[in-house]
Length: 172
Image (cartoon, rainbow, N blue to C red; front, side):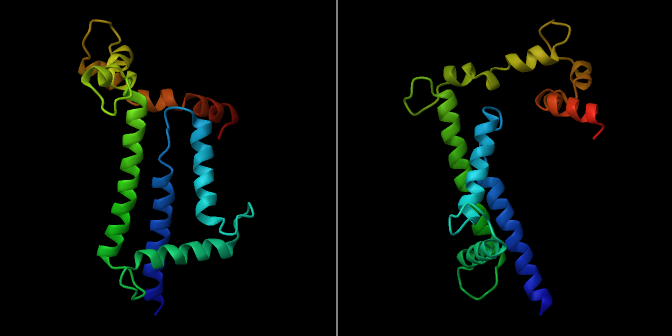
């Protein structure tokens, strides 16, 4: 009996966590404050059921139970692999739609609803200029394997440099 409850409960927690993570897609490369605010808003939208500005354990349980019921299409009190797959695919489709919207916002310079090759190439993240600038350390116009290996982790270090510096200062 415990196993019957534990497995669906674990699936619900994983799905719920995944739902929040996927819903929180946000723009990780742009305005971090707006991204985190949107994540917080989605968290409270999902769990603060009585909209009092606080999330109680009862609201978390009620939200979890509602997610389970929503995904239990045949109402048998169990989530089948097909039901779990359908729930994941629905969330993935919603995330893909948000990603498409963001790409159009960033790249569709003339706002015609499509991204031309020129617009695509002009987007800083896709132009290749940034990669060449960081990896072509000798400036010869090509990236050698040695340059690429020497730069391992450059994306991570540059994005999180401040947090790494702070951790080094505090020893944490």
